[in-house]
Amino acid sequence: HTINAIIGLLTNLEILFLNDNLLTSTIPAQISHLTSVTDIDLGYNRLIGPIPKGISSFSNLQTLMLSNTDITGTIPDIMCNF
Image 1 (tube, rainbow, N blue to C red):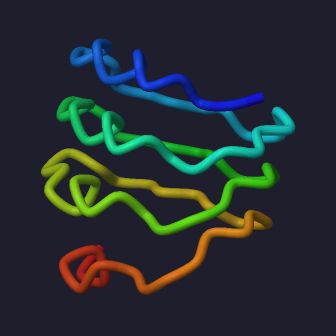
Image 2: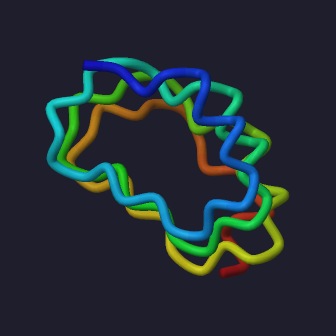
């Protein structure tokens, strides 16, 4: 199971909960198009790779849950101010 790049077309989406869905892909860069999103929960999946840099520009983002995933790399500095 993967997160399809078409998710980037959901530009008015405010809440994205895909936790505990056996996802095994990377987080697609197109997720950066979800500029209205306030809450993202992708925890308890087998996601790999880095956090897409575009997520750090989400001005409305209040919650980003990535617990129990295989995400690698660093958390973008701007996200450390939440």
